Image 1 (spheres, rainbow, N blue to C red):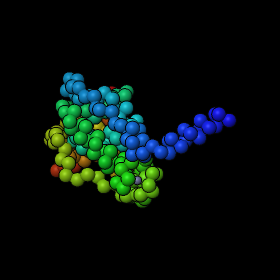
Image 2 (cartoon, helix red, strand yellow):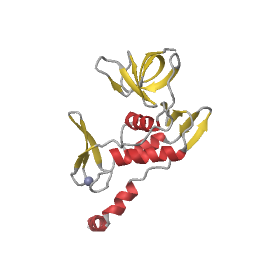
Image 3 (cartoon, helix red, strand yellow):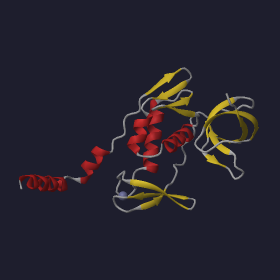
Image 4 (cartoon, rainbow, N blue to C red):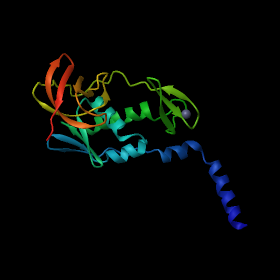
Length: 206
Ligand SMILES: [Zn+2]
C-alpha cells in the first residue's frame, strides 16, 4: 500500500537523521525573561524553563535559591526572588542546574532521570545507559550573602526536614530551622535566634 510505503520511507529518513541534531532541536531552554518588580526580581517564564528541563518545579527553585543565595517563591508561572538578581546570574544558575541535574556527562543528552540510591543522588541516562552521582557544583558563592536579623520575617522555602521534624530552609549561607512546616512549603518565618550560620525561626501565619 502507498501509505505503508510512505511510513517506511519516513522511518528510514528519520533513522538517517544525525541524532545530535535531533536532540539539540528537542532540548532548548527558553531564555530567562527577567525584570525587577519593586524589591523583587521576577523570572517570568520560570514554568517554561522547568518544563524544558523536565524536572520538578520545587527542585529547580530550591537549586536556584541556594545558588543565588536569596529567598523566593513561585507565583503562578513565575518565580519571584527577593532583592535584585541580574538576568546573567539567573541564566548562569539555570545552566548550572542543567549541567548538574539534566545533561548526561557521557553522551551530553538530556534524556536522563534522577534516582536515589540511599543517600546518593544518581543521574541515569536513558539514551546511553550511563549513570553518575550528581555532584553539586562547588565554589559558586551565594551572590547576596546578607546577614539575617533576629526578629525579622523572611519568606523561605522548606527544602528539607531535619531529624527532629523541623523544616529546614537555606538563605544566604544560613540554615534556618522552622518548626511545624512541610517540605516544599513556602512560609513566612520570623527569626527568633541566630547562632553562627544557624538560625531558628517560627512560622508567621496571616
Ligand atoms: Zn548518556
